[in-house]
Amino acid sequence: MAVSVLFVCLGNICRSPTAEGVFRRDVASAGLGDGVHIDSAGTGVWHVGEAPDARAQAAARARGVELSGLRARALQVEDFERFDYILAMDESNKSEMLARCPTKHHHKITLFLDHDESSAVREVPDPFYGEDSGFGLVLDLIEGASAALARSLKAPSASRDDAS
Ligand code: 4NP
Image 1 (cartoon, rainbow, N blue to C red):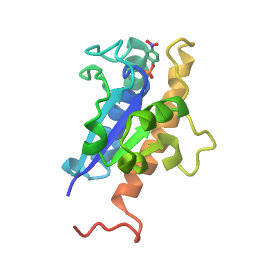
Image 2: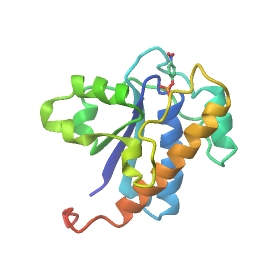
Image 3: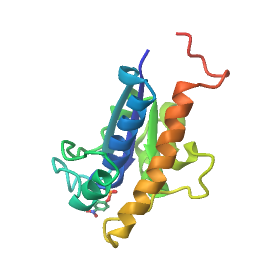
Image 4: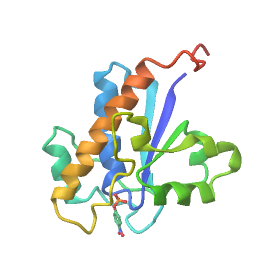
């Protein structure tokens, strides 16, 4: 059965579409192919329908990831039912989601960077009002966590029931 992963930030034009694009690449190169359903969304509604921020697109393109086809959408309450992993970019995104999410699905909501044991950083900082260099840092953090998550989906721990 396919596993589903939703990346969530505030605007869905910088961090979460970057994570979606990078993770799509990493899932494909791990040979997981159609076994993983991937999407992203924002807790805010201001940028719905927009392509990713031009600075995010440029930073991703510099690492071989194309984001231009993505369009921002708002997080919906149905997402908490539909997705297995709901990955927040920062603590603010996480607490906003927990406030909206039915208790039975709270366990699905985690910080994306917590899936990267080697990362000392736990939040992907919001680059929107910062310097262009902030988008490079976003890519660095996301590429580490994306690779770690793709590895864990490829070689799930013995405690997880993947037989079904
Ligand atoms: P994101 O960045 O959450 O990584 O997409 C932001 C994009 C837009 C805004 C804030 C953060 N905004 O305030 O419009």
